[in-house]
Length: 221
Image (cartoon, rainbow, N blue to C red; front, side):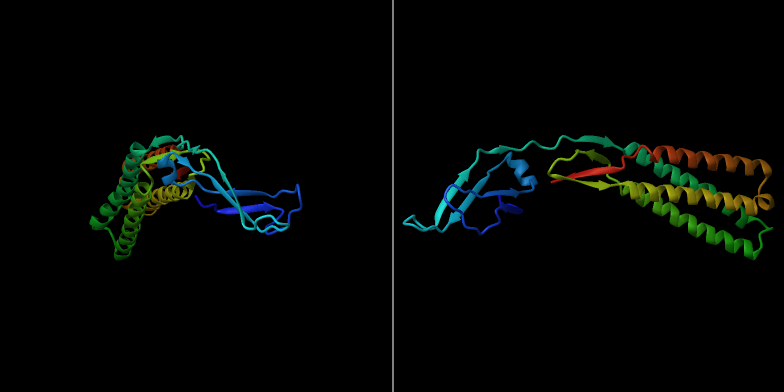
């Protein structure tokens, strides 16, 4: 192995008097290859130029015993079921809005301005549905928690989780706005109530399930 960094006290190069010594500390980050081999060979070399009839360029070699490397002990969380649930919830939220949009577009009472607003809402809903899909399936199926093992780094998943929450809330808001602005004119009162209740249920269920996703993931190697 080659040390990533080395610090000596006193700083090198230096002059040592009889009975004086220098202490050096080196750091090295374990790699996946090291883990696969099962050990790291630790060799230290020191060179000195001395006087008073002592041979110059004296080489001192220190060879430690092989240091066994314990592989990271990880807790794995399979989130595939929650990914499918969250994907389905995004689809259902988008479908609620789309059903209202279709109803308005097919109505003889719809004015050109109404249809333009429906087309804008449809485009926005489609974009949010695609974004929700990419956020959910961009998460690793198996989320690892390997603690602070030297060969592992921690990747935060919190930003993806927060984006999904905002995406879900925006889809809910689109449906709420469609109901507020077009519900009385184009939908029966009973259907407005049903859609409102269903939209609230989907948003609440989405908020509960996304909280089950771990907020970080260990990447080792």
